[in-house]
Each structure stands twice: as structure tokens, then as C-alpha cells.
Length: 165
Image (cartoon, rainbow, N blue to C red; front, side):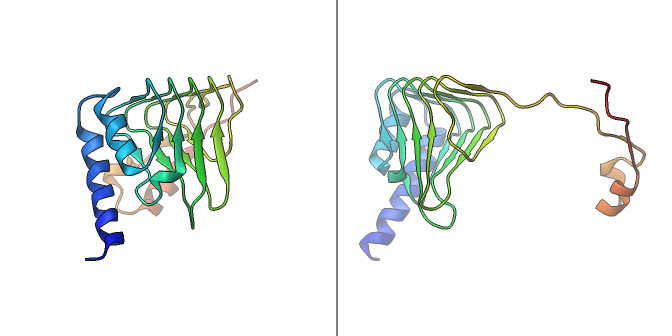
């Protein structure tokens, strides 16, 4: 086994261990630092947080950042980019932060990313991003679990009128 392969295997092991270990402000940040992630002081990393396996060194997490349960940070799509989460930022549960090759994506100081968002562009400092409220789109005639095909499900949808503004 060459050193590169050993490092990649160790990196994945440490990432998996960090995702299930206790210690959101102690052990998890320590394990990610060992992988090459730049992690500041007083950082909270929630349960199940996935931080890039291929390029952990391209992730930078500044002081006092909180990353909620099951968030995903990816610093590559078709090559490495760079993800920088600045001081005091908050990444909500099940959010995805993903950066493309050769780009830098910054979550600004004090920014708040609400639950379930997909972030592909930089967020200015002290901005709160929230998803739109869910809205009814169609009436279901054939429930998805009982549909034989997706086409049958889709054909059974009756669009609803858009709400008055």
C-alpha cells in the first residue's frame, strides 16, 4: 500500500469516527483537525456532520462556528475549491454547503444558514438565509406508494391555482 492510499483510508476512518463520536466541541473538532480541516477555537460540530473526504484541507472553520446535525460541507465538484466558514457563523441541520473546482465559497461572519438549505455561492456577513415556506402544488389522485410507476404518479397530479398575493 502506498502512503497516499493509507492517508485516504485513515482520513475516511477519522471522518466516520467524528460523525458518530461524542464531543461536539472537543473530540469531533480534534478528529477533523487530524484530517487536515482547519478548525478554530470553540467550534461546535453536531452529530452526523459530513466534512469533505477528498479535500479536508480545503475546509476552513473559524472560531465560534456552529455546524448543526447532519450538515454536509463539500469543497470539491470536479476538482478542489475552498470552503471558508467565518467567525460566529451558524450552519443549520441538514444543510449542504458545496463549492466547485477553483472557487472559494465563504459563509460570512455571523451569517445564519437555516435548516435544509443548499448553499453554492458565498453568503455575506450577518445575513440570515431561510428556505421558502412549503406550499401545496397539486392534488394527488394516485398516492406515490401505490403508483406502479413515477409516470402514473405524475399523471395523477392536478395542479392547484397559485395563491393570491
